[in-house]
Amino acid sequence: MDRLDAMQLFLRVVERRSFSLAAQDLGLPRSTATEGVKQLEARLGVRLLQRTTRQVRPTLDGEAYYQRCLTILADIEEAEAAFTGAKPKGLLRVNVHGILARSFMMPGLPRFLAEYPDIQIHFGEGDRFVDLVREGVDCVLRVGQPADSTLIGRRIAVLAEGTFASPAYLQRFGTPRTLDDLAGHRMVGFLSSATGALMPLEFTADGAPRQVTLPVTVSAAGAEIYFAAARLGLGLIQLPRYRLVDDLSAGTMVEVLADMPPAPTPVYVLYPHSRQLSPRVRVFIDWLAAEFAARLPSAEGG
Image (cartoon, rainbow, N blue to C red; front, side, top):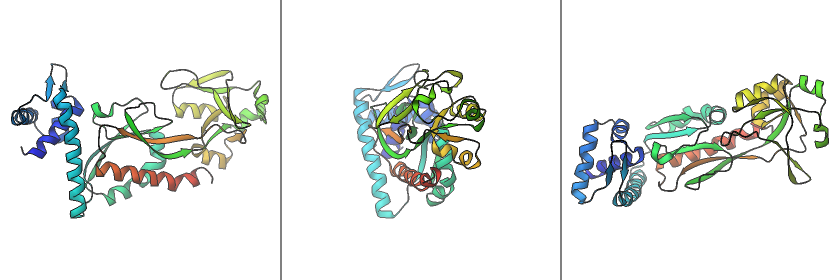
């Protein structure tokens, strides 16, 4: 195993905390991965990994070598691409917010893969916390302000939000024109994925944020059920406007209090501080930002 291959193997073992998973990622037998790291440690004359029965962790020397390897391999990949004209290649691991991905990413994905035929993408889907380094994920697509200070965030879009209800609901409870009119109304409850707490409705009135909590009959922890409950007339909801373009056009949902919208929601791509962006991750993020920019004006009715 040459030095560059050994570096790549070592990086993957550190990130996956496992020889077996690293070997699986790289298409190697586990024995080859284990022996490759042993040879690397022997060549350097230091112990890079602390091995236990449950996981593998880098030593202090291993952490330092990991950071140097990240820089070296990224520089080599970028230099080769610059001089050979080669396009980025390799496996890209991305965890995405499913609804956003279906609306903004998937429609243009065939064009991205046609432009970069040597990039393979593995998608994970969900809104859970992802340990990018430990799980070997290159970047995540998330809604809202980043809470993890160990990640770098690039804001790629801002989603306009609104308050919506079904015609049947408004016929029963009336159409609110002011925040005071919300007395006697109901909302479909949305539960925070981070805390499990019920999220209040948010409005912008006279330039200041206002929060209102209404009685709840149905609550949901996911956007699909949340939206479905509102379509059935079970309460007011707040969602990004792009989600309701078809319903608003068809008249199956109606926007209310449009002059007091919730604050817009940012969309971020997050990646680790500790990892220098490889060319394949960089071109993917640039492409994703362009896809959002191209689709958002029509998606939000602008």
